[in-house]
Image 1 (tube, rainbow, N blue to C red):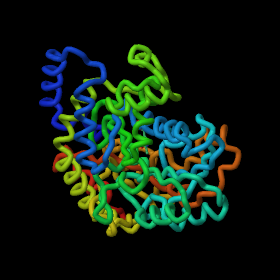
Image 2 (image 1 turned 135 degrees about the vertical axis):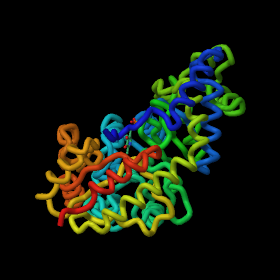
Image 3 (image 1 turned 180 degrees about the vertical axis):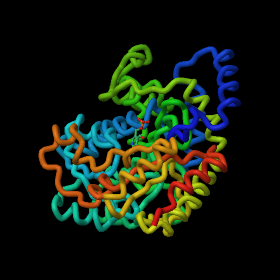
Amino acid sequence: MIKLQKSTFFNEEDTKKKLCEFIKQARFLSMGEECKKFEDNFSKKQGRKYSVFVNSGSSANLLLIQALLNIGRLKKGDIVAVSALTWSTNIMPLIELGLQPILVDCEVDSLNVSTRTLKDALEIQPNIKAFFLTNTLGLADDISEIAIFCSDKKIILLEDNCESLGSIIDGKLLGNFGLASTFSFFVGHHISTIEGGMVCTDDKELYKNVVISRSHGWDRHLSPDSQKKIRKHYDIDDFFAKYTFYDLAYNLRPTEINGFLGNNQINYWGHLVNKRFDNFIKLHKIIESNEDMVSLRFSHMDVVSNFAIPVILKDQSLVADYKKKFVDAEVEIRPMIAGNMARQPFYRKYVSNPGNQPNAEFVHAHSFYFGNNPELTEAELNLLSELLVGDR
Ligand SMILES: Cc1ncc(COP(=O)(O)O)c(C=O)c1O
């Protein structure tokens, strides 16, 4: 059986052994030095000034939106564009926090939003305040142009990069094109900390509020200098500072176990990304030569780093046969993320006008994906190759 999630960690046995040793000798397991070290390591690898570690990618999304509201860059009622092809918890924080999502269609052959589809959305709704773009399955469309377009139109660009750690376009890592980006370290993603997520930004004001809002609203994890400033501003002494809460917040902290795992797994970043890219190139060559399938457009990208490989059938009548082929061969398959978000019950319940997304609709009905794991064996890769070959 080729499962979507092949293991909990890369190099599992060794990682588990080291984790046991770490737990045995650690004095505290609540958020501390390991988490801070992972944030610093991640900032270095990603090339961002600030990284804030949290307990999931979903929490990272919620926290980012809350912090933008806290510092006034977003206001309740603002319209925020999102990719129609994304994950539920990319959009849910917007609804939960009183913002209005609108769906932007994808391109079928990149699975991602392009400037073309973004411009179409803007024509229907000219008052878009922010765009929370999802970099879908390691791919991207013309994201450099999207960033320029958003900057010209004064639209705040945010990236949900939970599916694309390590992908590079125009020499730049995905996750570095907007004001802030979010990442997931859930099992099966590029790096696993069991559960975990990150918010990255270069913006100091946003960073400080993300830190405050991650943990109860207090200043405990700000730098000593920032603590001094905020306490002076609110006239709080060091005793009361312990239980002073400055802004709307949650408790989304990770643990030292997650931090330790992050520091262990981040060492494999290069290998994990390269191996996934190699697998993708190898398997996509077969997709490309199969007339039943839509060939993906990624020649404009330097590196494609995905944890699952999409299969899009041109003709809907072929979908059931290909799905059966994979299932019969015991290869786990899933729908293309959440498909067209407009179809999801929660979206229909809370958003009155879901709009039209013909391409996301096509992808919803014509596709599925299977896992791309850096530890796929030669035999497994050969089986996947055979399954991708057409019958015609
Ligand atoms: C685009 C996107 N955003 C957010 C998430 C949520 O991440 P997590 O499972 O860590 O909460 C996912 C999950 O895979 C995702 O695909």
